[in-house]
Amino acid sequence: MNKPDPIPARLAALKTATTPELKQQWRDLFDSEPPPFNRRYLESRLAYRIQELAYGGLKPETIRRLERLGEDLDGGDRTKSRIRADTMPIAGTRLIREWQGVEHAVTVTADGFEWQGRPYKSLSAIARAITGTRWNGWVFFGLKNRRART
Image 1 (tube, rainbow, N blue to C red):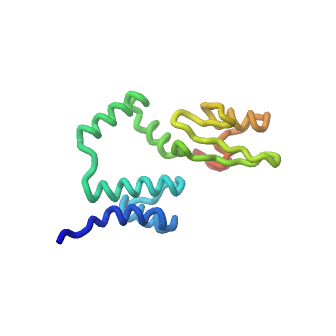
Image 2: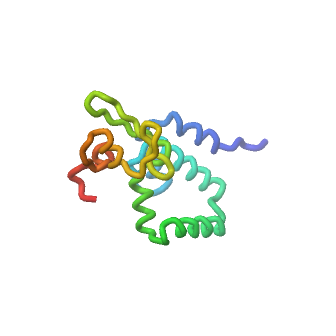
Image 3: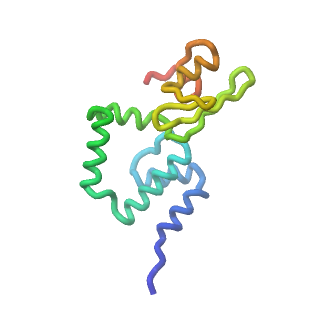
């Protein structure tokens, strides 16, 4: 009799795993420290990695095509694409900030941010609209420590 495929069960278990367990799986599967992103990101990347290791990854021609598309977007600057990928929250992420007793929710979109139904290119523009003063949007929404040198 055929053995059942354990991969679907491993993928389902990601939903009930604790964040420390997800981070340990990241270390085991990627042989690196997990990034400081939200749980949903960790789950999706771990799910992909589990399937990639079990069933194989993308075909080389698909990887080349994706790299060409990426070069079209960022001019081939690998540093620029890594910085964006490492710092930008994934699309769909909601950033919540209370300001003077009012809670403000910003949604990360594929090409920027949305606040109160309007698109914005930067968090700083939203922070200025909320406070009336100039702010570093990343600091205002708690994504970057004001003292950090990045």
